[in-house]
Figure (tube, rainbow over the protein chains, first blue to last red):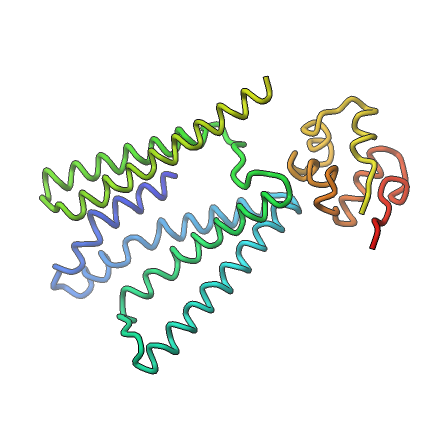
Length: 188
Length: 65
């Protein structure tokens, strides 16, 4: 979670500096700043998969396989349409940036579905901090970033994005809090 | 594949979590095996058989089809 928080801070506060910077090396440093926390997140995920048991590894494998297939098919369709000038794609920036989030989003969704098929929720709360608290902490972080951007950088678009993300996370926190409460009630 | 895991667990008065700890797997895996949603790998089947001092074929039997 700390790595994701650092990633969000970098994306919203450091990465935009890359466009305004004239020095090529500094521009590259700003542009690549979000990469280390993402690599750290991937490493953490790999560690988690290595530590998991055979059923969990199977659900991870299904998630990764399906997400790779989905992203490949979407890339292929988009590529063919762009090559035939049916679709105009900004292949140098926007499209490439979407590949990783699409891969992770599909992976998460498919893994949750696969875990449910085997009778678990896909996001069991084995760790000390409940999921709804984590969502609230990240929502608070987004709120703080949004407020900072609004009052210091005066960028309404970026601050609206941050506050929108915070709202979505609060909705997620409410969902997980209600689910936790219902589970505890069912046990009692 | 059908199995007698739940019956054997009940016989020892173990919860799914306790059995999971003894087998070094997650509680979800024990639940998936008991409900027949997941067939364990051969090493895990051997661990289960060893834990209950039984043979694999006396715990697991092929399902229909």
